[in-house]
Length: 277
Ligand code: ZN
Image (cartoon, rainbow, N blue to C red; front, side):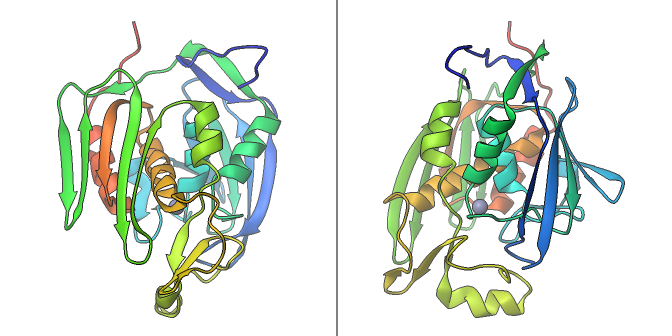
């Protein structure tokens, strides 16, 4: 990430210095804390809670409603998106509490902490997962198509009431991730809020940690005219972190949700990654 030393995207990365973050969980409404530590080559992204290791992996997903929850740790996707968006492979994350803090609802505060902690290149090369044929997952009006490609690219289309259709393409690049994707906040429809709270969700939700939408429009100013689709790309990057390896391929996503994202990850997790030649 530093301008003076160009890093090789094919080499594994971690951070130089540990850092901590405290905040509130968007669903639990309760305080939580994470301490993010450097980790060695081939370690992967591992959370530790109450002495137990929980790998950021599809096998540990327990819930995909309104977020991606691992065993005992809710809402991991924005943190994971920040790590993957910046090309970080190896971290040990100590968690106190039941949820990763929501902060401002985007991946930017995590990304800024990663940059302050310095992203460092390690000695081993990354393994990538590269598909050789098209893979498609569908559900209701949602769809993801992954096609073979030498790079990682997401083309996302959403179409929601009030906000309408938004389209955005992201081609893997840490600088572009930082500028165009990381700042996009999670969003919610205020008309759904009371119902969600009754079901145990969104108890920490507020205008300081989400883009709020009502029938009349936005309740707080969006950071981008197409912030919603940018956040959907962010969520997908975070969910793909549960693959354990960076993906090479071109994704076309239509209104995809965490559930559908993880259906794709489930299929991909049965494939074998390889190292670039
Ligand atoms: Zn999200």
